Length: 288
Ligand SMILES: [Zn+2]
Image (cartoon, rainbow, N blue to C red; front, top):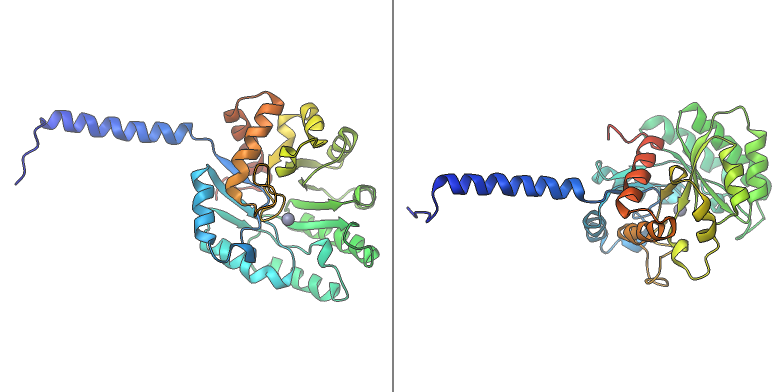
């Protein structure tokens, strides 16, 4: 038997102090929620587990996985089921996936939403940048999914690209239906931000674009309330500086949070606390 050179009391005291120190560092660590992560994308097929552990190391405790369409559903649901404490799946039809088969895709959304728990209907919205070929259908699909979200009492995740007015028109037409959610990858003006808030309990998704030189969103963020924003990466896209041009991942949420802290002139810890609290509430993650 090996004898320790230290008396048993010292060893006990040391182990108590260690446990306290670990608990304290956990308490102090900034916790983030990536409210828009496509970690289930094929871009992570080779190193999904590593991307998740890198995110966890940076304090990312939860990720919302927005849906695109039926073709990416299995990857999205499969990878979130594998990490039930970390990844939270959504259901919806993305505006750039609205095509000839939009009715089949909507049938798919309506059948899946009955089958299991989702945390939001998204991402949904209107995209006039890629194509306007199916614009009337995009508007209809967006409106139908706003109704669906209300029926299931879920928040929505809005994708809006060169479509602000049409998004507002649809929200105007569906007024009366209670809506809440995020306005993802926001890059609008202060006036647009204020207008969004008139439609319901909306949070503004702030991502990597904030770190780009001359990003207009920086001056708008200065005037926004910290209560109105949540953090998101939209990985593997919209990579923040200094990694712009490379693949984005959820661990980079820390870079975005740091930039918010600089622009808003508030401690990083406050950015983490506020945005995480807002995301927990909006996506109802408290018991998860
Ligand atoms: Zn997205």
